[in-house]
Image (cartoon, rainbow, N blue to C red; front, side, top):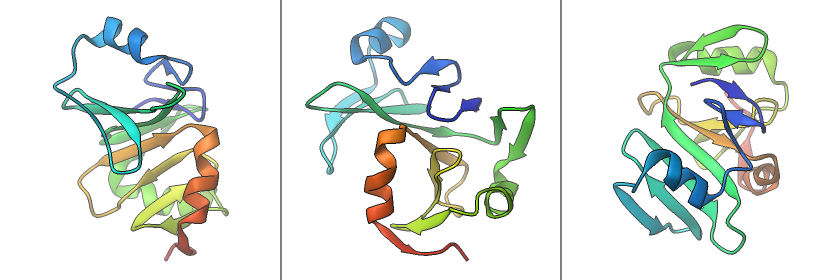
Length: 135
């Protein structure tokens, strides 16, 4: 997964609309409104979540065996939590997820490589769920 925090995920800008996404990737395997009111387009290998009322892209979740960050940094998923502990002093836990505000991502370290990349405007909601600093 190539990430430019809050700007692009694998070169897909956070300004992308649902219609643009469908033109790029076709019909999703599944499309539904999730439990928190986000409209999900599930393509199997990646899930895009949009705000249902505004249509703006909120989150992108996909498997990332390696996360490529700006500056040529490549972080294997197995090392991601340790890397973020060292490089994001504002990281926190929320709902079982490790959240990095600096890099705009959330993941469950025990959940086989799935990483959720966040739009900047999503961070306050994640902070509101914060349980404690990361271990």
